[in-house]
Length: 211
Image 1 (tube, rainbow, N blue to C red):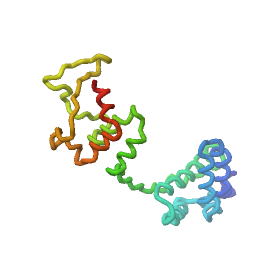
Image 2 (image 1 turned 45 degrees about the horizontal axis):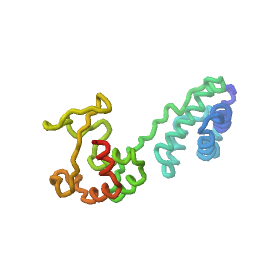
Image 3 (image 1 turned 120 degrees about the horizontal axis):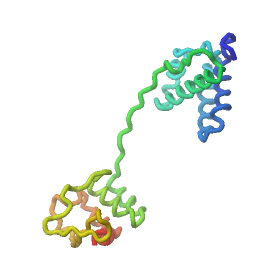
């Protein structure tokens, strides 16, 4: 439609955009549902395109601020912007894209969520035998991806033996009882960890890998 008649309504534009560009995407059902509920069935959709200003969009989003999270409001802004952008490229609308002048909402960062001590045994119990030792080491030592416990990989009395791969050293490690561990290695303040590892059979798994 030419801008002379106002470009049609915003609702018409959104329906056209959904049909021509969204219908064939994997997110079609979700996007269509949100656009219908939060845009097409609202007063904003009744405006002609020439009447849709950044201020009108801003007021509409602000009216929804008590119901929707900032990220959801940003999605609505993005849908409006995409519809106007596609309409301009297709020659359906020659005016400006008012959504581009609407500021994105600031999305607060989520606080990290950590495993609780009582959750660790359940997590380890549901892992495969191959993955359980790796995850147990990461959980109980606190190591993150790319980290290692110390730069010195071998002790002065340990031989650098590489029977399987030239880049992987193997050192026999004798078994230790919990009482033989120094206080600084008491599994980071989790006395139940030793019992948990034993119950899950991790001692044997570590022995196989280090032998």
